[in-house]
Length: 190
Image (cartoon, rainbow, N blue to C red; front, side):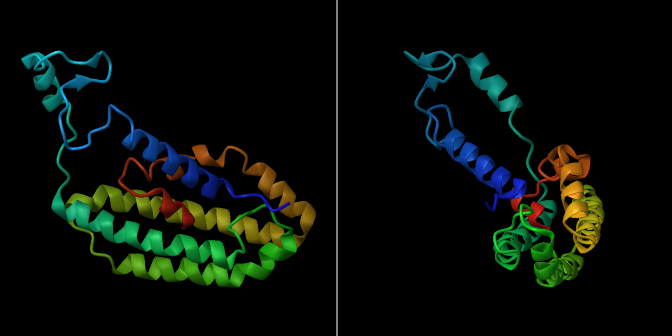
């Protein structure tokens, strides 16, 4: 059985959760119904203290330069994901070592192309921290890729040992830092 890779499963789960949250009665739909999700429908206008605290806890505005950088990189990631899924015949590591070796050249070419395109994206001063997160992720991902292909070339036993060693990989700091830095889940395709 070909399994769905953890990255793809995370993307689907995260997307489903975001859709559900976005469609929940308490979500911001752009209209104020006068209801408070925690206490149910309001019988009248909200008290001043409720609206004041909401305003002070709102997310800070994102610098336009940083947002432009994030939009550009996330667009690259969005374009990369379906190509990686296609090149790897489903995007899963739950394949025999020989298949990983067979699909690696096309996969590697996509990653190299992404890296070349990423290097062309202008990093404004306000996006410096996000760019550093992405750079650290690329270094980490290159290490994972190198370990995977080295193991797969050694044979099935080494390949399975590498995959077993990756249990818990989703909690690696280089990976978990992507979201808070403003990158989409699709950037995990890199």
